[in-house]
Length: 120
Image (cartoon, rainbow, N blue to C red):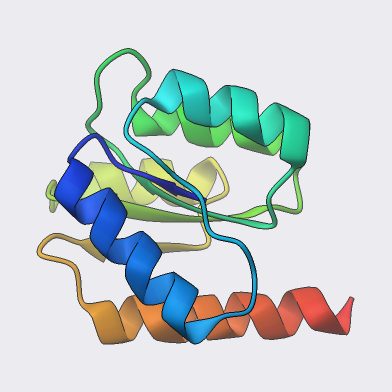
């Protein structure tokens, strides 16, 4: 699952991830809709922005972890400060990527997550 209020980012990441994995990738620009979909489908990996309307990424991360603690959550943010990093990791984020997004880094993180999921 990809969650970013910027449609270009959500669509671009979805296209890239669809090309490198055989899993269905869904994207959302509305974090409320994303949370509803997560509660129904329990995705094993979520890539989410932090700064979004309606539900901040930190709140989305917390709610995802409350529903399914084993879900890996990768944070994407333009905010480059230690508090953001610390808060993300304390809430259970797997990794943090700063915008502009390093697509090779995201691809590697997805492969690691997929390998971990398949091994379980």
